[in-house]
Length: 584
Image 1 (cartoon, rainbow, N blue to C red):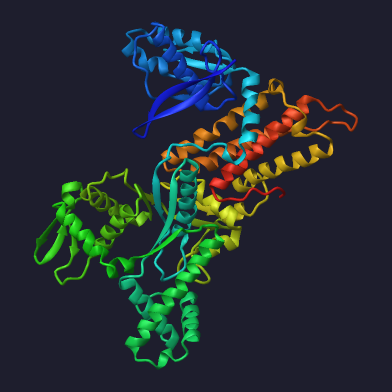
Image 2 (image 1 turned 90 degrees about the horizontal axis):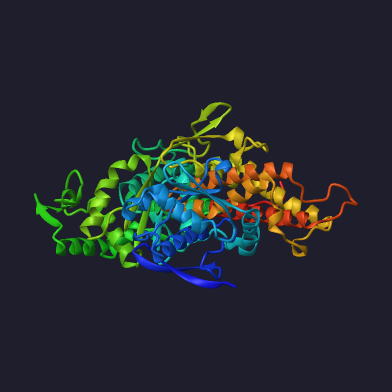
């Protein structure tokens, strides 16, 4: 007999009700090694101890658990006894003993040991741990989903390269990381919009048009202009669209080269991103902010809030009131809008569209941009680092034959997205760009990423997925099928326990990747999981060794574990925008 017990907690400032199965005595039943269920079991033990008068303490909203460093010390550990000991007026080990007695009665818990000053080390029995395999297979693509971002409307703005050239490696890194972060937010329950900010207003567009006109006339590129084969390619394409463009006076020709050239370049950028597996929901044009009056509305709003003032004929924003190192000119004394004017209007536009969280992903050369943007956010009455977050990414270097790759055949001066994809493919490029913290400069070894060996991290993980598919195919040929049996108590081999533990960590890994804005945690987790799977594959057989060997529930149960691994590998690779091949 089981009943449902409600446990109330708070997350993101609102109450939540979670449900967990409990036995007739009120003790939660641990199903698998889902960390959330174990947390609920610990909180229930604490709540029941308070209700029984064994402890007099406020039950905390959050209970933290973590994997033990050695399985000799159990499967999970928590410091909850030390966390509440002072409030309970008892030594931590005494609190731990009280909780251990209750946790030891929980179905699925094999042992609870007290370690050190009051840690609780929890060991699950094989059947409880093995149940996770079935839970994962039944959940399928939903396994690992969470609700940490539920109710939030998130705008993730990334890449946003100027339409004056192909996407360079820095932008390519953000294409991979930004899309992965958006996928993780969606997996965590958020409504996400991917947005590309199209910088089609300003001096860089004028220089681009001048460069195109020079190329069309066969003249050298302007000193402050753009060069590379792509400029000549676009100039030719513009002339094919408008054959008489060079017969126009230079001012008119420049205007046409600007309009048509930007359109052609941006169309190419969109195509490159699409081929890279990145699809934006919104392409927002900077020029629209100026033509629609959005800049004036933002200034009016900030004026109402008392954040603007006039000085020396210019309009200023009081950013020093909100932590910036100096106030910022918004409208110059000549009446021209300064660059920050677009930022003000664009941020307000996002908030007016209903986004409660806006993320902007920028390159390493934008560190100085963060302070004034956070000040702007605060000036609008919002909360910096909550309503607005800015992530800074470091540079990317390509290495081939042990030497840096410094120039693109097409762009001339930089390596671009197409160069990387051409060298290693979309999957390897996306994986390589997301597997390291964005705080770190990374070197991408092109020779390594083209190897079909375990040295290549993307191959290592994809091969694990392909191997799970191969196991299923061959097992089916031998007559081993999921539908014919499952006994989780049979998964007693050390490599099975380690693999199950790794599978159980996936939801927490995804939650941490979202909370910390670090998609690389998913990639590193997948490599660890692949390692556990390959070890299990070497030590435990799913298929009978001989043609006449009897097929048992152990074979069938191991097939469930194999399939659970496939599900998690596919889900994790999907979060990174990387494919899950069935064969390699």
